[in-house]
Amino acid sequence: MKKLLLLTLAVSVSFIANAQKTGQGDLYAKAQKMLEAKDYFNAEDFVYQNDKHFAKFESLVLQANLDNIFNNPELSNEKIAKLFKGSGREIGDSLKLGLLRLKHANHARLFEYAAAYKTAKQVLAGPSKYLTDDEAKDFANMANIWSLLKKQPRQEVIINKDAFIKMTRDKANLANLPVKANATTIDFIFDTGANLSTVTESTALKMGMNILGGSIEVGSITGATVHAKMAVCRELSIDNTVVKNAVFLVFPDEALAFPQIDYQINGIIGFPVIEAMGEIQITKADEFIITHHISPVSGSEMALDFLIPVIRIGDEHYTFDTGAVGTSLYPKYFEKHKDEIRSKYTGSDIEFGGAGGMTTKKGYIITFSPVIHGRSIDIKNVHLLTEAASDNDKFFYGNIGQDLIKQFDSMTISFRSMFIRFD
Image 1 (cartoon, rainbow, N blue to C red):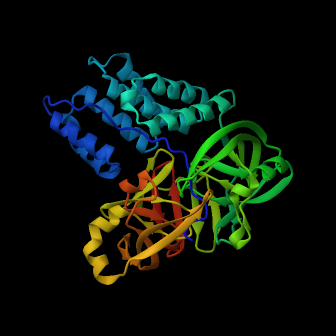
Image 2 (image 1 turned 45 degrees about the vertical axis):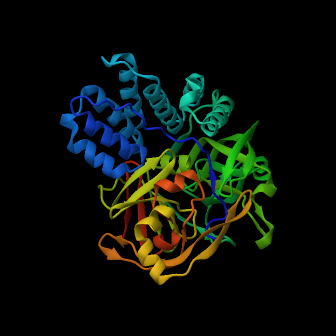
Image 3 (image 1 turned 30 degrees about the vertical axis):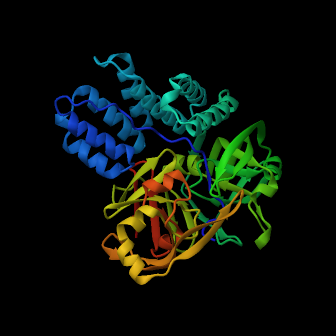
């Protein structure tokens, strides 16, 4: 079982910009295709290499996308505002929808809930032909979330001084951090792959969280829909770091229980809290370090797919998930390496699960050998899926988990400078 819990809020960022075949429009169209394919790093390289060939309008659209992807949501919204105010060019319905979806993602990342709610409603009020039924349902769900949160203050993280925390491993071998609120300390899983922090209802009550109610639909890795409430924790602490107004999805205890291994998840610290810490380090000895220090840019470049970290390894791009015990590879990896895989391995059924039950997909169990900072690493017993578990899986080569992280003495994740470095 690679990861016991994978919950996703299924709203994607749309990189549609109505490329026109005028002037250097073919370059603009090529950049757009890279963004739509979530080939973020090559898109960034291509846009900067060809920037002088783009019209001002085209450059603003592309830069608004890249600012979002590389964690500059304020700059992205500034460029979107310029486009809407008067770019000297008419904005068609398709482009307008793409910019609104991008704006929605920016507001979500900035904890601007009222603005995210307004933008989600604008998306839903636009021409329905540009949204699939599933996308419309997803945006209605997100509008429901922001409606519950729109009067809540923004999250704030205060790092009083550097923190050095010894993480513990639970029964599922997942890394846990001690989280304190309401004079109660409970271990929470540390998980960059969780779009939102998560808590069971009993834990939320023990920690004095303000449960807002609601009925939020959250997708699980099995395809099942799990219903949750929303809550705000006015103040929690992780060692010397204080988090104010942290938002949590609240599930019934049984939704995060795995009776087959007598295992209960109490809570998960997800991406919004972790990203706001700016820069963290994790060591092979399971030490979790929060630091004021700003490291020079080095290592593997990192991007964000809405609220999920993405890293480049060689010419391939992977999502990155500290909450996953093992690395998983996706159909895109199989298509690139299928001749070698078929010659060396026999197909197998891959079983995995999360909140909502278990599921099985076709695939292989292989040895994955990435090259990280010039060093070739062999990771055995990696699950390679030949059929996608979710729509998003189709865009990436796989998801990097703890088995790769553990090959190094330490790992630094910088959300300020957008890189991941393994040492």
